[in-house]
Length: 280
Length: 72
Image (cartoon, rainbow over all chains, first blue to last red; front, side, top):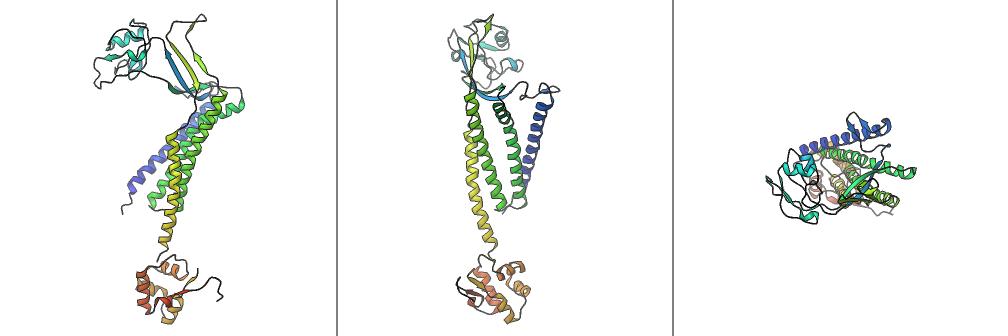
């Protein structure tokens, strides 16, 4: 039977590189948080910093009064309206320079006056893939927030740094597993223990983030953004409301649960292999 | 384990060394040691057949069942 040493060697290298890279990023983030005043190292800005706050998961609800969606594949103006960039304006009038740029850059307004964003398609003249974007709805994101409550702050810090720490451990466990399989492709106690540990770690990570997001959500306030000029909401047709959201990565949870289940299978395999080895 | 391996006795009777038996049967001395010390989980019929052939004996001469609570 082919033992596929090459594949395991490759996977081992990937896992090792991933582990070290994640560790480096984690240490850099912590160092930037602890040793810098504003979270910047040279021209690199780290998101999480005690002066600005830490990321809490939020859902952004966007309300449009009367809007258009500008999209296209323009290379020149990619930052302005490339991909599925969203844009808002009123009726068919060119409201500001961004929309004007979009039109000048090769997008064309297709039809008449509409009331809703999803009915305002712009087509770029040379859109080879023929994409038509209709709308964007609620977005999942993170909001940097800070609090004076030290318990919540501690939770925020852990919540922010945990994903990278989790990746370091996952890559480390995978490198252990692949190293073992590269040396000896067999069911052993070590293999099943590593698979088991990986599964449990993934489940623990998902459950912790889920519970932490509930706590953060319960103790955070909803936020509404409005355009205000001289204290009066302006006629801008967009409103953002940012609400804390509960995070539960179901896919990762299923992967963790499956690995945990497979751990039992590997245990059985290890026992069978041991019996087989002791059959003379 | 209630199954006793009497290989040592048979080897003594036949005036044969473990290494010699292992070579004739076609197993490693390490595996023969596992068998002799009772650490083996199972024995293949082919191995048993070879041992019986080499030692000119019956399986019952090598394997013996002893009840757990019986005093030897």
